[in-house]
Length: 182
Image (cartoon, rainbow, N blue to C red):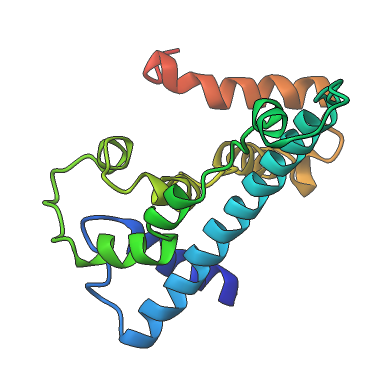
């Protein structure tokens, strides 16, 4: 259950209406660790993917056919590395982005959270917001159906045919559509 609690705290931290409003410093740090762990794993997957494509690009390069060596020939055959060096260090890390997000003032209750993240100035945190703020899957309808079936099948109706039980379930569910007018 601790994983559920961590995810709930992380979701609340990413909700721009609340952020760390109701949490202690320890709970905020715990939620930040969960969020940063997710974002770092996403970054490492993206880095691995880009490294794979970069290595396949390196394999496709043609070897130099020039037989003479020299500074000018080396310069002409030089293919620059497409990976940015200065730009990478200029972009803030996800740790800094998360801290900047938490320093921003909270938004009003009427603000659309999904619209906020879609047009946010923190696009690096958007993947975590999508994961933690999405609606969880639910099985309410199937649970209701099993509950209704349990009410139809009882000890007194043990010899009820499956076909008749199916019809009774259908009627029990759909009679609401007719406003109970039958």
